Image (cartoon, rainbow, N blue to C red):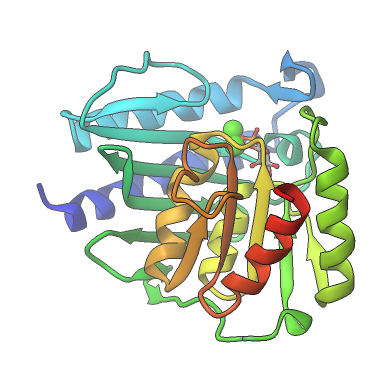
Length: 264
Ligand code: IPD
Ligand code: CA
Ligand code: CA
């Protein structure tokens, strides 16, 4: 088991799938969109990209099982699991907003060991393994050093299918809009996490996420010196549907806003 080597090969594969998605973006038609469920879109692009990734990842590390968004392969519980979102930002892709990514995580006993996020249209490859630092296109990245929430730029994902905790969410937004320099909604959780890792965003929070949205980016944030938790402050942020990712310096202040909004 050589994580560095696996990471290297996974990066090349993510770029290959990204290349396919980039090419298809010019051919794609609105009639190609399928509705999985309320506001959950998909097309042949997501599914074919996932097939490319699954085939490649099977070769890179045959012992690992899979959790994939488009279910092109059955989930079989194993010690090592690939967690794959072939196209994170499908709604952006469908509407020709150029922010979308390929996201791949590798878990061992449910803990992230490797993460790769490829932001397709900027040709930006973010990656890290448990045994390495975090990198963007080969250059080491780190989270921001800023200590001051009032100087921070934040990111989130607006709820679009689960509106149950909307009042709490709006409460958090009201506070964070007043207390920061601004809030962004890019439309790809994997990119949000990668941007926390490289210091473009100070912090990110979202609820209603799935493991494939965050498994790749989470380890990149961790290895870039950031801090992650669920909205409850524990480490159940891959499978627990809520995530906070922040620079280490800002984590406590940021967590306090989320905690006060969602948990009190
Ligand atoms: C979505 C994106 C989006 C986030 C959603 C995710 P998809 O993933 O990451 O930013 O707000 O919660 O479902 O469906 O485009 O792969
Ligand atoms: Ca996703
Ligand atoms: Ca997706």
